[in-house]
Image (spheres, rainbow, N blue to C red):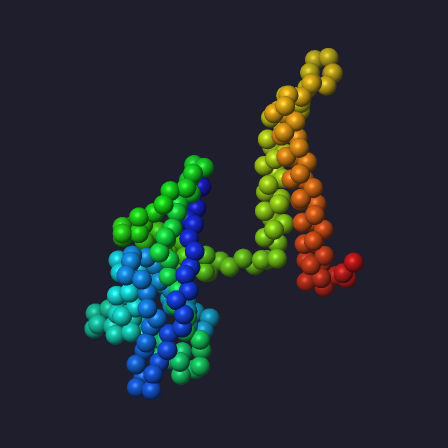
Length: 204
């Protein structure tokens, strides 16, 4: 069974380091969720029952808070290297399974761990070809529409070889398939010249 986790990052702004080498984190909402501190090209992830308190602990980590200490020191090094330090949080998420979406209770440690893992995987597997997003979506929609069309009586063979009179619903399905295929062709024509150009082939 395919399971997908849906979430959006909320940007809180930059973290800064003052002249006294004190790390100052942006203010986060006092709600459960997942946090991300990005220092240069590297991202650190964590979760908390209280994101506002989590920012305070990163700014002033305790002696046993190894993750917070790690992020704290990395932020200080990043500031010395003049790397940007940005902070974002997830305060709501949904899980999609069996064709439906359900909101996740981020009060639960297990649910926050699930969202955190999904966020880390997404960060480590950035889309290698973002310009193809619309084309891939059009392709998936066309495949779904044609598969639906294939199940109609119109597409079934008859013993006498005569065409079947389509029902009103079959006509709707055919029109949706036609629209989806036209949209796919339009996206193909828009995307593939970009791909050819990136691969060193002459543009049309």
